[in-house]
Image (cartoon, rainbow, N blue to C red):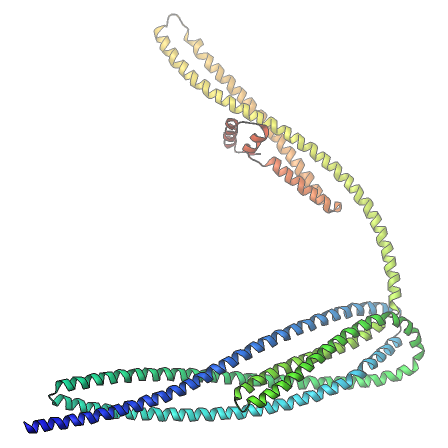
Amino acid sequence: MSENYSHILEENANLKRALAQSQQIIQRTANDYETLKQIHEDYKLQGERLKKDNDELNNKNLTLLNDKRDLENQFDSTIRNLKIAIEQKQREIEEIQSKIIPSFDQDMLRIKIINELELPHKAQLEAKQEELEKFQEQAFDYKRQIEVINNKIELTQKEHNREVQAIKERHQLEISEYIREVQELNEKIDESREKEQLRKARRELEDLKMRHNTKEQEAEELRRERDQIREEKNELMIKYSKQLDYERSEKRIYKSESEKIGIRVRYLEEEFKKNKIKLDSLNNGIEMAGREKDSLNDEIRKKDDLIHQLQRRIAEIEDEHINSETKNHQQTTKIYNEEHEKYLDERNKNIAIQREFESLRRHYDELTEENKDLRGKLSKDLSSLRAENMNVQEENNKNRRQITSLTKQIEELEKQADKRENFINDQERELENTRKKYRETLLKVSITEAENEELKIRGGLNKTNQTFNNTQQQQFQNPDNRQQQPEQDTYALQQEINRLKRQNQKLKLKLQEANDKIVDLLQKRMNSSSTGANLQQQNQQNERHFQQTNYYTYEEQGTATGYNDDEQQIMKKIDQEYGHRY
């Protein structure tokens, strides 16, 4: 007994040691879980911060895009209006120029206007090119900083992955050791006799298993969230790379456009030199053109005011751009040491502002070129406006003569239209009279048919009575006369009905003829287009009146003529029998 008791005590001590070790392992796993949880929360906070920054950037981009679209629409509208005005003036100038102005005046004025316009804008072009070069250098610096930041992000990702793998391996080793110890404890518990301790150990094991399962589930959730964060990060990297490629392509396009502009400026300078030689020989013609130029200087001043307004707007936008650049530079210096990702957001802002500035610069260049063309074209119509005025006066006189002749024709046509209206009104009155007669005949026919039916019924009753009386009184009465009287009455009624039907058919024919005449008159009036819109409206009114008078039901006709309900029902029956409705 003593040996068994000592053996049980040893087993109990071993079980306590194993439980203490298992508790230590559980504490380690809990600490590791807490560390992982903290790391996950940190990454979560970083992800939320990135999302917020991304949302702010998207909102700012949307606002900037909307402003950009508004500016583009304003510039497009102004450019369209200018182009339309220029095209109209160009056409007028070309028409007048072909008649009056010689070629040397145009060249002289064009050269002079080009000189006046090019001198103030050359310095601005050079300044804009210098600003472009500065912006390009800043863009290269930003790209280098982005590459450095991307390399740092990759290194941090690799370190984080290594730490996570090491934690997973440690966790798996501890779990395997814990499972072995649990198996050994289970074997010892099976051999031991202390059931209560075994139950407690099993309960603790079940609790530990439940905790282990919950921790595994939480670890899986953390892995999923980590994978989601990685995917979002990859998407952001792809997005930023696409933006960089797009900016590079735009930069190439801007370079090619600037080169084209430089070539065009050189060509204009050469033309300017050539035209300057011509100006020396044609100074006498300038004095004559100067007088006529004063009339068009007002329009040119208006266009200059518009250009100055646009220049002020561009200068304001440039000042805003410079202020925003200074603010962004200050913010980048402060935030670069704290968070690298905010720096990227500010870079996107600068790029968007730069795009707006470049688009405004392009619009400004286009407006300057269009202003040059406009001044060159306006110089052509200095002397042509007078001849055009004479032509317009002659055309006005011709139009007045035509108007007087047309007014006379319209008065004659109105008289004819009044005559036709009176004729149509007379025919409509005849139509209404024929319709009244037709209704009266239809009522008579219906009444005669009803009387005929009653007479037939009475004749049948008389026949039955006569046969009965003839059987009793064959000696005193003559049956032939009694039978001939109802037959004669029915025959007379049938003749009246046939006569009324013939009259009805004649009235129908008359109605059809009247309707055909009215339709022909309406068609003739519709075909006569010279009468104008007033006659067309009268025709439409007459057609409506004709439809209203011709095509309505017998109920409306009965209410118009004062028929009662019984007579209206009789008219409906007659209409169903004959199958016509007028």
